[in-house]
Length: 166
Ligand SMILES: [Zn+2]
Image 1: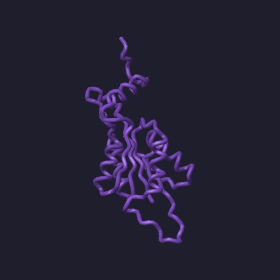
Image 2: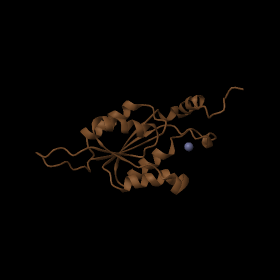
Image 3: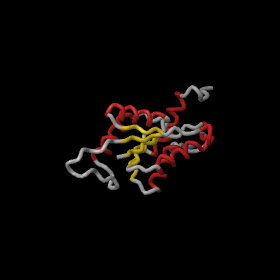
Image 4: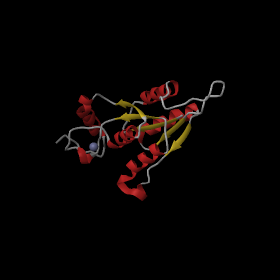
């Protein structure tokens, strides 16, 4: 079974990733057809974009559990800023059984003038997988209503962000 993991770079809840991966193994999506009875279970496969904490967390657990790992790093040199989304389409279009997504707040400094919102890459990947007809199981770092607070929390701790104190 191929499990695609996508998630925000800032995702900091590793156990949520572990639980979702175990749940995927124990409760496969409808699209997955297991081997006939009597035959050994198929190897679990993790696919991810090798970018950020959610991907690295999934990679760590998959390694620990002996899952096969398929890494799809974005080709930034080739595609520029669009590389992440292009990579997402490759990851989905190569065929998956299930997508697990882990959404955290966007902390792009270019977006500070907008209301706090979910980060873009993971949302694009999850939506693309869903539009392609795959089951997507989503987890969120906080409630939608707590996004502003969550963003403030990250920005206060980011060395790249100017201090809010005068
Ligand atoms: Zn944003």
